[in-house]
Structure formats: structure tokens, C-alpha cells
Amino acid sequence: MSSSTNVIFQVQPGGSLNGEIRVPGDKSMSHRSIMLGSLAEGVTHVTGFLNAEDAISTLEAFRAMGVQIEGPVNGEVTIHGVGKHGLKAPDKPLYLGNSGTSMRLLSGLLAGQAFDTVLTGDKSLESRPMKRVTVPLAEMGAEIETQPNGTAPLHIKGKAGKLQGMHYDMPIASAQVKSCLLLAGMYAEGETSVTEPAPTRDHTERMLAGFGYPVIRDGATAKISSEGKLTATNIDVPSDISSAAFFLVGASIAPNSDVTLKHVGINPTRTGVIDILRLMGANIEVLNEREVGGEPVADLRVRSSQLKGINIPEHLVPLAIDEFPVLFVAASCAEGQTVLTGAEELRVKESDRIQVMADGLQILGIDAQPTKDGMVIDGGQLGSGEVDSHGDHRIAMSFSIAGLRANGPITINDCANVNTSFKEFPALATQLGLNLKSM
Image 1 (cartoon, rainbow, N blue to C red):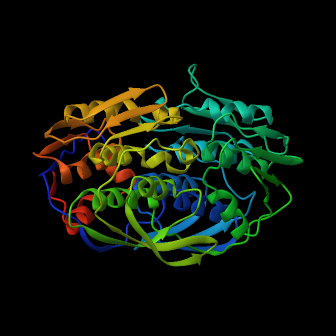
Image 2: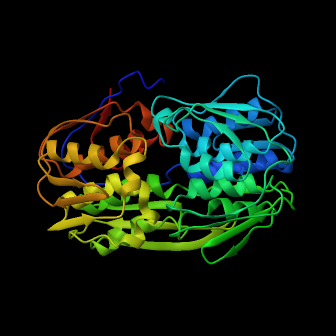
């Protein structure tokens, strides 16, 4: 489905959420399983793979570079790795749809290849900032041409054997920048190290280690060199906590709710949403904790509770960066005021998530004031109205959840991109009790 088709979500007010579901696989890990599995020696088998447009964009890119990949069928993918130096030049530009992860990580991985590539994407992706990866990559000797304003299409000149390792202090906390530089470091002479200003998701480091590639982690710094190879392995991708977050909030705000989310990844670099909701008074239990393929996993049980407004601690912001649209909905239903600061990163996501959420919440009658790096929200009564997701999947799903506490129907325009991360959302939400129709 192209995003030019206007998919509309219509949500009737009220209801509660009850039941047990397993949301689809983690998007970050699905991307990385394809990238590292393709560069490994041997056959990698992935289960729990997210069959959504973003992860498929990564899969198709590696197919275009000569990697034989079977699936996904029921979340199973088999990757016939070609080894670290086995990728072949694609015969046309690699189109990455809406996926910022694919574009930023591939720019690092492709900078050190023996062939040139062009990376393109949809309108939203081609407006997102890429200098945050192209500038540090240039310091390593990469040659990447962007548009004058630093956006895609990216023209990457393969500099096999010419990249130099370096140390980089990241100005902003971004897992994509860190991962991009570590992947480039696999092809650079000497050591490449990256220090982050605040912890960000560490799936790349964990998965590299899972494939037997040496990564040294020392506090806020990760180091890698070209001395290493990837050996095929089996990967079981846990459920995506970013997708689970919609139901963590929904079951918290809707009266008489009781939902269990099975097999959710609870990597400590991703659980900011649980910590923030608990600070607001949410009733979330972490059950049956276990480790699967180097990643912590658990079942999450959440029941309704009266949430209270809080000042969101800034150290939790990078650990919940993708969950803020739905956390803004939680804040709208909380007693008192919620204040978010230190989240300017939200302005350069698939949309300007601060402005777009503030606009929509105001239409629904909530006092939500955007600031340069966050928002101030006074809890109140959500009303009915028509809001626009601006083609941003997380915004479309967040306003759907708002219907649980609205006093009239909510219509959400431009929802086709829900397919980029969580195409089962309407079906699972309806199964649990949300009155949602997709048109």
C-alpha cells in the first residue's frame, strides 16, 4: 500500500482492554538480524522477525546486494550469509521506504564496501537529517554525497580498505548514529570507538557479540575494529516494546482493563516507557523474566490505574524516545500536569512529533503546549474530533488509544504508514476491546 492511499482510522469512545496477546517482533532487532546475518559466514535462522515495511526494506536491500534470503513466513527468515566482504553492487538505487534505521545503518556499512551505492526513500525519509551520520563518517574517510540540506538521496562511494578508525563523542544520544559508526568500524583500519552522552539502545553491540564479533564495552563507550568475523547464529526476536507501549498506556487509562503482553523485549536501554508509566502510578507487573539470544524478555501485565502528572526525568528520555506520542495520551488522562523536557530529538522523527501531537491533543480539547524540547500537558477530558497523523505510524496509533477515554468518536487521517511498523495493530487492538475501524 503506498502512503498516497489515505487510510482512515475511526475510533468510537470508551471501552476497556482485556486479554493476552503477543505483539510482533522488535523492529530494531529485525533490521540488525538481516544486516549481520547477511555479513556472517553460514546460515542464520531468525524467528519472531517483524514482517512490516521498514524491516522488509532492509531485507530487500540485502537481496539486491546478492544475499539469498528466504521468508519471512510466520516470522521466520533464513539468511545465507555471504561473509563480511561478500556483498555485491546492487544494479539500481536501494529504496528504503520510510525506514530511517535502514538508511542510517546502511550508510555506515556501505561506506567501506568495494562498490558504490545510492540510498533513497519516501518523502518523509528523504526529509530526515542524515548529516548526523555523514559528517562523522567523512572523518573516517567515507565519501557520501547528500542533498544540499544534508538529506537523502545519499550517494555513497565505496572506500574499501581506505576507512580509518577514530574516536567519536556523539553530540546527541542516538542509537542509529552509534550503530552506523560501529558498522563502519568493521571496515576501518585501527580501532573505532563511540562514546554516547546518555545510554541508547544497544541491540547492535549485543547482536554483534551474538554473531561472535568482538565489541568492547566500557561504560558509555563501545569499541570495534576490523579484526573479526561474523559467524552465523540463530536469533529469536522478542516482541517490540515500542508496539507493546500502545497497550501499556491503553490498559492503564481505560477502566476495568487487564492485559498481558507476552514475550516482550525488556532490554534496559528500551524500558523507559515502563519506568515513566510507573512514576505516573501505572500498575505494570514484569513476569516470567528470561534471556533469549542475549536479550532480556518478559511478560508484562498491566491493569487500569489513575495516572498522575509528573515531570519526566530527563535521563529516561532517550530510553523512551519512540514511545512519547502515546505517553502524551497517558499524560492527557492523568491528574495534574506532565512536563517533558530534553526531547528535541522528537522534532526530527517521521514527523515533528511534538508539534503534531500537540496540535491533535488541542483539537481533542486537551491543554497541550509544545516547547522547543518537549511539551507541557494538563490532564483533562479527551473530546471527539478529527486529527491528522501526518503519515506518522506512531501518531496514528497513539490517537487510536486516546479513544478509550474520549467522550465522542475520533477520526484519524493518513494512517497507511502504520504498516511500516505494526500492521497487526488494528486487529490486535480490536481483539482486546478497542472499537476501531480502518477505512
